[in-house]
Length: 540
Image (tube, rainbow, N blue to C red):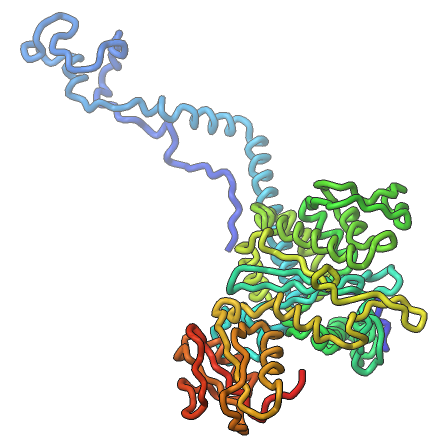
């Protein structure tokens, strides 16, 4: 394999000063009596406003010969243009007397314009290069289009956006491709909610084609086994492998991925001007004190302002606390980053934008398109931080994992036994319930029409594990042993998403009326009736 493993992610106008010739202040004002000297106005400017019939001699104007005063009355009254333009006269006159100053001002204007233009070109190129490398595309989530095309839905959970976030050490760190952080950011744009689910890095799993290992090794195996010399292609292959590993554990689809290394994490926090985290309890870790100015207290309890280096120490510390506690710290920091990134002014500041682009472009891999990222950003603005729930697999009553020693390794495994993920899937699917299943919340009645005992319970349990609202489980009065399951939609197509998912799951087309002879009377407010046939599953 190539040494690509080095990890190298790799009609304007200029304003000036314009002198308008031919319209200067000395181009000639209106002078009605050029033959005689201009008379003095005396105290005319000090007189009260209005028409004064008797002036100077007290004789009515109509009885006097044509006089200077009469001339003045017959002439149009003009504003003193020289007075109005006096500031401009002084300025232009001054610049004319100081041509070097005028030239200097022009040069300064040109320089400033050139700097602004160059900055704009740099920002444009930086954005082009970053979006080309960062927003490669490849992921897809129907929920970003509000699931408008129902035929694009493959399974329950597709009306959410599930993003797998992976944190790696990157260049200069031992095990640079081990995923030190694994987290699902699940967004429900239908109901404006979001959840963060932490996955322990020591979870023992089967990695297809690589035997059993901790989950944090799956990405590394994918990088190593890729037959491409291109790092982005290696990363793409690695993400495909981790999907095959993780989706059977969690039971939900993964739509997008983001891989970020330590360097990018620090740079992003710094570019945002730091973040504020309400630390629930003091974090003490002498093993990384040398990175914290030899202070063993990494973070005190209470609201703390973190720069990039401090935030990284806070999320990666693990020697004096559990993997589970570290997962909670990572979720706190991610929410703080979301708050700061969506705050007013962050994306209107060109310096911050440039810094963010530089950090992300070099040290982050995603399979978002630019349009998908912009849509996600808009959605995130509508989700208050208070509506972002933190989830894990170890906090009662959902304490589904435990620690164990396996082959001399300290690992995390399901309480139900190695590779027994049923309880985990049940919890995750319901906690990250499909957006439209949650919105429609249709009630289901499940009936067993066969002589196979417990078949309705088996079917109902499976449906519940996918987030369906099962309200009735019973047997039909008479076991007719139908060969095929029947799905009855009593909403007349109103709850179209629930109907669509059920049709795909059961492999049948819904009918609008209960079949004659079924002997079933659905309870009031029931939306769907499932009459289980012999084709139904007999186990989970």
